[in-house]
Length: 174
Image (cartoon, rainbow, N blue to C red; front, side, top):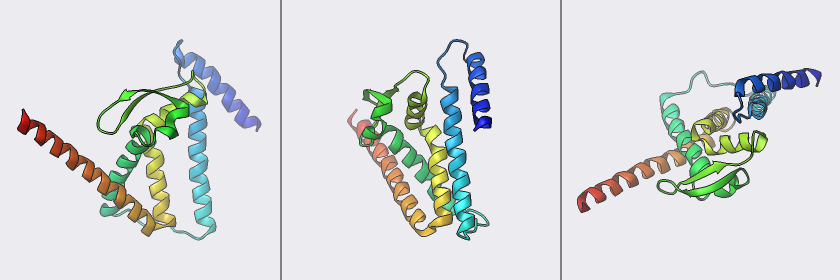
């Protein structure tokens, strides 16, 4: 615990120098990275303990499907109207943004609430966590992971087609 406390203190000192008076939640970011690292280490430990082997490679089909699925699930969690209750403790509603998506402002100053709000509202930030979940799924439950990934990929393709259709409809009307 002493090492962790020393790291936290050092991060706090660096955060003060880094921010130049701006609100940047560096300590909570460090905490989020620690949680991510611990989760990956735990997954690796469980995999080793249960005799799971890493795939020799991720095939192009898995990469394509799970890449599209990561994009869709990241946007679904971070922007979708239906998932707003997951983000509500960390965000404030600002208004609609795009088809079925919301614009939200992150709550809190520079603490953990703010950092988690930033993670939950940023599809780019969230994608790392989602992709890691899919990668773990390929190790522990590849068939279910491919099915779930394919489902999210199908929704992403459908979304793209809906947007193309709407654009064509607008062009024909105007």
